[in-house]
Image (cartoon, rainbow, N blue to C red; front, side, top):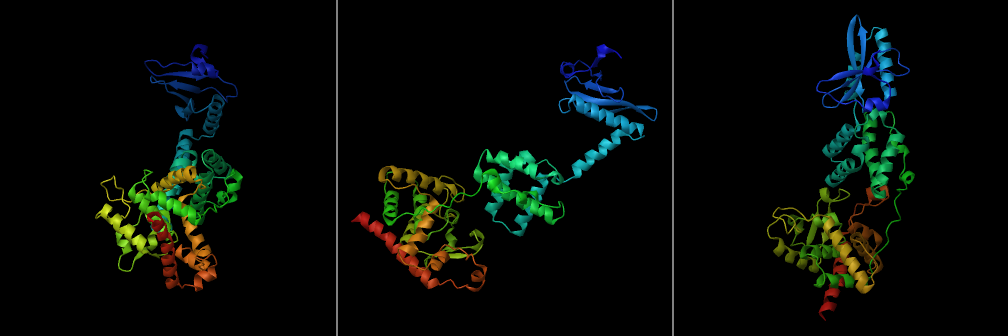
Length: 418
């Protein structure tokens, strides 16, 4: 063997340099079944392992893989496998081609996710925002780590490694990523692509991602009055439409997504009702918010700002007809809370805390039955029997409570004017 044209160590392989024309170098390594392992170096610098063998009297070159992708021992093992196949009269090139076709045909996690999320979208099982969140989460946290892995190769170890990576960024997204994985792997299980869903064997606590203690913060009437006065002041940079959105939230107890995407055709001026359609509701149940005179006045003023656009709270700086982003009021409340904490010593609060504030005062301050408060929040009863057999909405009681709550809030404005 010409030692000048052979290599036997990793360092020698790394030292190979491209030339004007491609050339071959023989590999002389331990454990080789017999000679014939070569490295082909292209003018561009690419180095590839080949097995050069004879099959049925003819020379054949079997591509094993790039030098950067295979270690020297792995290349020797692949070469020895090819030698064994040739000894049995099998063409290794055909075996490699069949294995490649099989790998390409096998469903990967990326494709499974798309099949699942498209099915959910077509069936209407999930709200568009939930669909969008799953897509974002897959692309942001899961695609790179498991997207190209075959579904049949997914196990707890693979999933745990992926979730560990998510946990390094966010506890909350780790828990939600596990939910996303459960959804698409349950889909695979129902279609007999897998025999079990390994994600079901993992829990958020395995990644220190369990749900934290639920918030219990709600504002006292004095704190609520301070917030309302602050919204009416000129001491902050919150835009008029966001201020109005927050006020309507205080008066109705509605969710931020319900408020931010409110449309003018949902408002019935004559009946003073905001009718939330089922497709925009979190629980897919239509809901009616009865509007106090203060709410009606705020909305009429907002209509003068919005003009003929579709959404009540349109992106005012945008020529397009689209609603304000649902995060805008959240960020505004965060700034306002920080300011009130500094100036008034008020404990930090969030936008959702205002919804809890409504429910708490409806029961504690105005003496309403808790079931009425739950109905006004558009909560479904936890008990399935109650949910099934108690369909009454007690509309008159809801209307009366919204009126009394609005009257109480209206006193804030009177106090400021007096």
